Image (cartoon, rainbow, N blue to C red; front, side):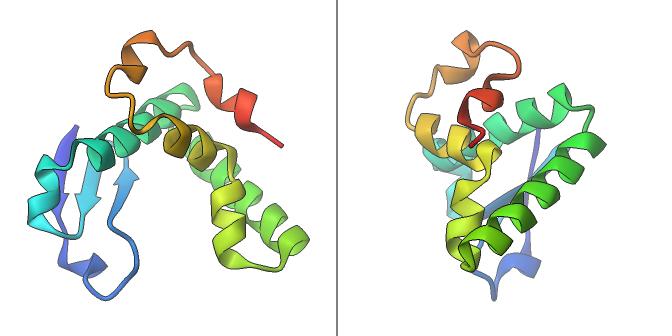
Length: 109
């Protein structure tokens, strides 16, 4: 895991994004934000499980499926199984130690 502070996120609503093996964060102070970093580490694990490229393909496909269905970008983002798993478990800083492989399937609607 490599944490990079990225000015490209400056004018966005995005606080962090994971593009294996990097975690890009908007604010340098967020390096200490354990919840945000844990959320992004969950995405790192998901990306590895799907051999990285398949994660991105599934993520985009699921986003557009939900966008078509819900007609709302914010709701579509939060409906993605990968995001649902990360948001549901980001407060549990020990989650990745006990997480079983492919757990994101549990969050697939």
